[in-house]
Length: 178
Image 1 (spheres, rainbow, N blue to C red):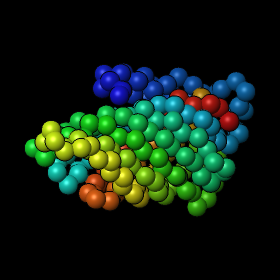
Image 2: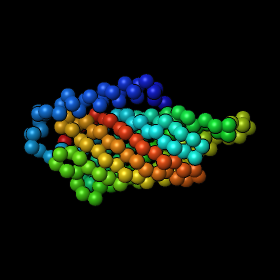
Image 3: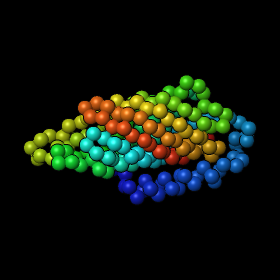
């Protein structure tokens, strides 16, 4: 599971990363349209779950799937997921980003999100067994790709299954230039 301090350090470093290469980038002419490449970074998600507020920190890998779709895979830690009935301390997520139009030449995009969110639930009673819960994710995303390949995104949405969750996510990624 990712360490919260590591996620904070990576987030701060990656937030500054786009400004380092925001000017002329070798290999990409200044007038060329910006496109998303493979990305690796961190995500921070405050969420309101049925039992109370959570804070999720995770490592995220993203890749484009053509000019109008992308795939995000994330795994991380959950803080605040403990109640008298159960303990939820980690998560895994997979989501598909679907854009109605191609990414704008300046690197901005809006997308609809659909995916799966998995959490292992550990009951508080020692005799009970762990169970896995999978929720369906539906949401909306806005993001910006920079000349140096970095990507900054924001998401809001709803996750539902056995329980429910309203969430917002901010992710920062270093990526390949395209």
